[in-house]
Image (cartoon, rainbow, N blue to C red):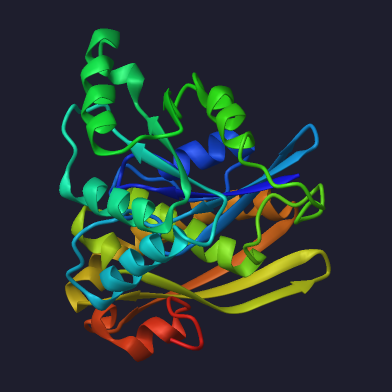
Length: 294
């Protein structure tokens, strides 16, 4: 049996943290900054005779750039292609416009939907009733699961609820597979995560990573990556005084790449200015943010 679930919600509600918690491994990059995930990332785990396939989508928001439009289209398009949708929200007793738009899409597609109220460790339990009531007015969810992706409480209950929508048939992926992401894509995302972690708020969203060389030689993976930013001022911030910031980002990324790949990594990075790349369809396509037929 297998169940494919689209994880949807506005930016920064904890979708990637929740996916990582359910799979038990880090698949999606995580950051306290919103809009960390930019494309559909598939994560896989098996429990008993059921294989769970999660499509971790970008946060749904009002797009201001072509990249933003792409991210929103990925979120919306993921809804009809799956067995179930998990709408992830924060414990706030108010249904915002992004949630309403996603609920409208869920209703339109007729797909089964589960509501996951994340970050319950940040509020008092009695406040959850108002949150549940607010969403119950908007849609008749198959299940409502309060949880904390951060500490793991409620995560197994969510898996149990999603397992109810599993479809009989062969498993979709091999037992030992936890993601469909190619290794070079995962390494690019790890490098981007470290920029989100170490840099100021504005710079990381104007950055992209392109792996220009990925080669295994004598048990060492040699990775060369171009980091693109939109302004020359940003380039200086990323490199830092005497190259200190870039070294810090690179070292942290290299250590995690070695954990993920299970082998030694030699990482070389260059920072390049590519003005307004987030609004250039050709740049976005070259960086892998559009399908070849779009």
